[in-house]
Image 1 (tube, rainbow, N blue to C red):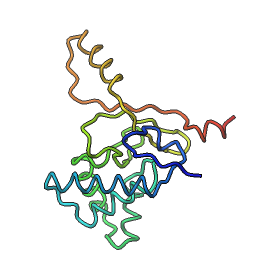
Image 2: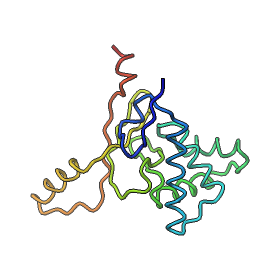
Image 3: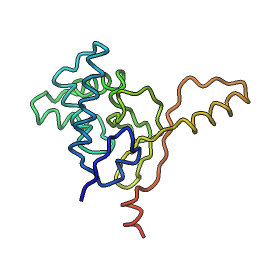
Image 4: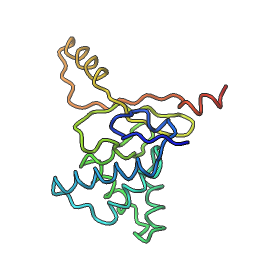
Length: 168
């Protein structure tokens, strides 16, 4: 039995059973609306790259995305994937997961936010969670040292519920 939750209300959706087709479809629709409102052109290759990232709640490397794009007839040259992924990140439609040197679709493309990423070290599933309390603590700690945080990418590595259960 799958549960259906709008992605913006359920930060742990990646780790929960849910109607993934609905989740991906809703997120893609919001991303398309955001791109249109910004005047950003979601070309066929960019659109397909976003769909590929939305097919699973996990981080994907650029070459994995490139392989999928190539199998869909978009070419096998690395710039094809890198340009599409760069566009998606620059327009807030995807995030770069630095720990994995990979990318994941933004689950909240229509919201200004700075998430924390919870990364399963076993299956690479990535959940995007609200980082406001973490960011506030970081900013306070930095301010105590006279430092101003301009950009931070907060990633936590651990086990998702399924992998944690399997490990026991």
